[in-house]
Length: 270
Image (cartoon, rainbow, N blue to C red; front, side):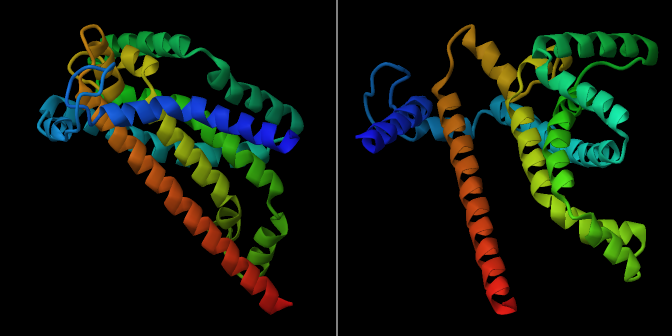
């Protein structure tokens, strides 16, 4: 009975999490604009989606910001994690507190602070808020997540491999890329994925730093909520969900194959 109850509880939790997404997917094929009654199957919301230039441009802006922010944050966060790891106990404690601060800080505080900073610098340097300010803001709040993902892998890393690589003739830079990066790569990958996801999803900070004439998908949907959200948003959300799901499946398949190869190599070594 305990096993049945625990399994039922788990399924209820997953139902609670994924039922809204399932409803969204179903109503993306609804012939009517109604979100309360399914009147018939259609694909015209998907065709309308690819004809809406403003919506596609907002989606393009969102993907560009998320991709660039995740790449820059991954590089900065990995370098910062390595630097924090090499510090003394007192310095490491201070830097970890500074790293956690943007994570626990409310987004509205971060957004307003960055907006005031960009307005002040814009008055001095003569630039307006737009793509560049949004990118800087996203890199700012994404970098701590990369640091917090890479640091545990650095603690687990076998430093002797790095030292052995140098003893065998590698330069410090080559030894770093040959011995250190492969060991902390899972942390780098998970940090990059988190940065990409948070950047793709962000509304609050983008809202305060995007300026006039530059919109991302979350800010555009927010402007639609005042009137009525178009079913095209359901279609777009469904496509995003399917793409993310396929990416996760491919990553899991890759990890399973890698584990199988490692097991075979271990058996051969034995």
